[in-house]
Image 1 (cartoon, rainbow, N blue to C red):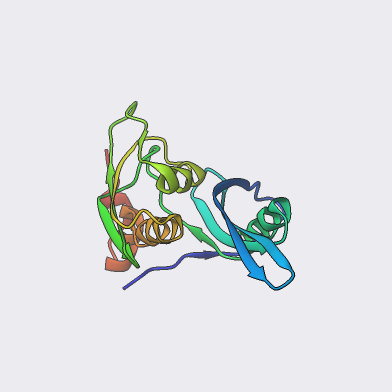
Image 2 (cartoon, rainbow, N blue to C red):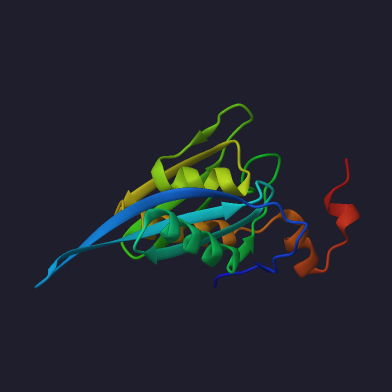
Length: 171
């Protein structure tokens, strides 16, 4: 069961966008070739909020702008614990499978391509991540965000169980 922590965008959230991939599409017609572009973009505040979007347009800059607007409409809150993830998590979307594991301070982001963009945008500084299966950036971004959105922190688990937070976080 996926846990989605949707976030409403407000003026006080400072979002930074990262371009993950651009794809050029060529359509051949009787009159010649028509080019269009699609861009997948990730936005985040580097403090636990992340979103992704896809923009399609006749120019690269317009496709990126549409992708950023789409990403701002679909933001998710992710638990970040001291610069890393709270626990191991895996997820699958399409043909892409991802595995995310917490790392000690100073390790850095050990991830490649699309996963790196997502993890850095959410504000994770130390993590070990592996992608298996498809390397399609669209599926990798969606699988990584799915894995991050399914993570739970200790405070949420304690609240669900009805345990006092003072008992959990003592000394």
